[in-house]
Length: 142
Image (cartoon, rainbow, N blue to C red; front, side, top):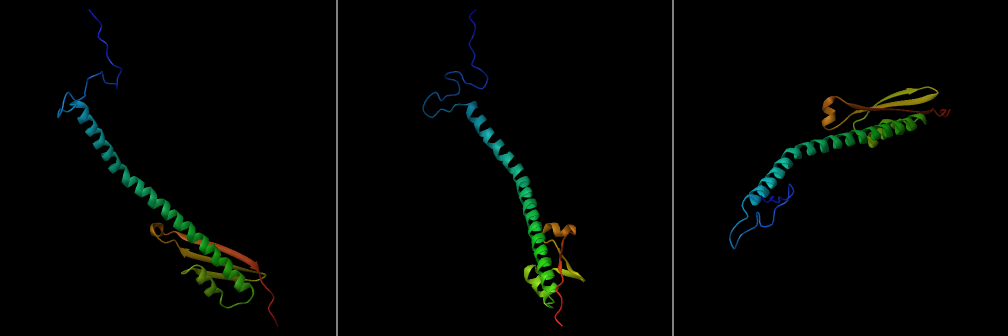
């Protein structure tokens, strides 16, 4: 008996799966290729919602971070304005971060606490951005 030579797994032997003439198809290899394409499409369809969900979470986190920065800026602005005796410190803070609420403590230091609910999907969790800024109180003019 003569030993039969087989191609390594994943390789085709010469002539296998190739068209035999005009109009003839390659048989099993063509249906395997269509099956692989269908599997890739199904995998993409299943993974796409996960990708979208991750993107939404990242965007919500960025939005929360931006809100925190604005609230901190509003607290600093209001503290500077209140420390020099300006009555419009609340309006100045609103220009920086609309919808911010303020708490002011004055003594040797003027401290402003600012807070605002986080917008978007994270706001539904009851998250609030808070910041506190203090500066020395300027002496008032007699």
